[in-house]
Image 1 (cartoon, rainbow, N blue to C red):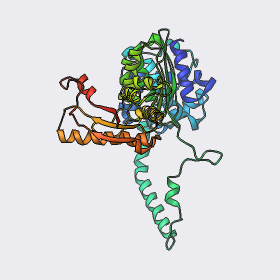
Image 2 (image 1 turned 135 degrees about the vertical axis):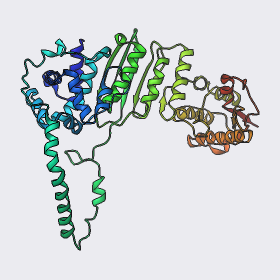
Image 3 (image 1 turned 45 degrees about the horizontal axis):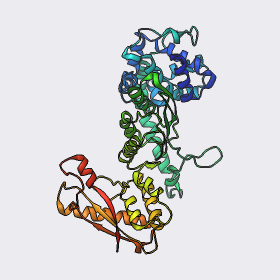
Image 4 (image 1 turned 180 degrees about the vertical axis):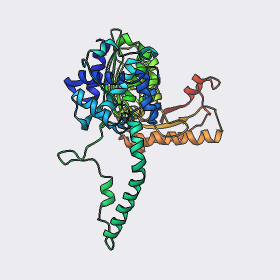
Length: 445
């Protein structure tokens, strides 16, 4: 797909203009270069409106693209210019501000690829709208607005005071209508009278045949380009097939920054995963066992507040491999291969460990009648010994409570903390300390 077709496709999805997108992009590009000093002159319009930082974030190479809204677009370009763009592009005036707000960051970034500011309109864009005559005086709105503003600067406060005085006189002796505060914060209603719900951000990733295919929907153009830039930097533009949409009704992706940091470690051929809201489904079935463990550990460690399904855990595999009639010893041997993670320095079990807890609970419930299991908490030797002891007890209790919540009868469990007194690794190394921070299981007599 060519540069222009890719741009038009992105703008079409961002604006919803459909078949009219091609003409709209051409008209907008033509307007940019109709300014005195071309692209730089257009940029100055935003600088004069106090929006220079936002504009600069759209330039190719800027790591964090910032959003802009229709009101800010009008402040920068002026109502007269918006009307002219709307008329020449065939876009309703009521939509032109939001359409430009969605399209302009994409257009600016595309035109400044490689960090080069264009001296004139790219030939590939010049033909989209044909010859557009902008006439004279379309960019003088800031100066003209200042002249008009000098009068309104005095009139508006006077009108506001008169309105307040009238409201005060009119409402004397009356109580505010019941429910007014609630109405001010009520959910936005859709056309059918029901409240609109906030959608969930999505992102699907598949690495296959040397290509990386991604798709999804994010809340803002800034989020989209942050993620695209990270993907291109990691995998290369030529290996990436991306289809990311922007939908303002979608919540911001809480996992975006974490995911960007994880990408360099997600190059395994055959890897698949898909985010939906605050949950992710991971598929490592096509990877060798060592890579399955490494990727699963990365997701579990880097996404503690996200529910991760499909983690590859040696303990879970061992539990699934237990044969009917397994003994208590076989049970604990499998349980001791599982990995339960906590928030740093606390006894809060991460959401990513919930599935592992459920697997462990099912295994304990299926053990021979009368089997009792001790849940032991262990720490490394960093910090105060008394604090480590307390933390180990709290973590052991947290796991036992979670197992009970998952269906294990409370009389089949006991919780005990050992602090740093039973190390299984070398506390002088990070790997050893990580091994010592664990939950261990023992059969009680």
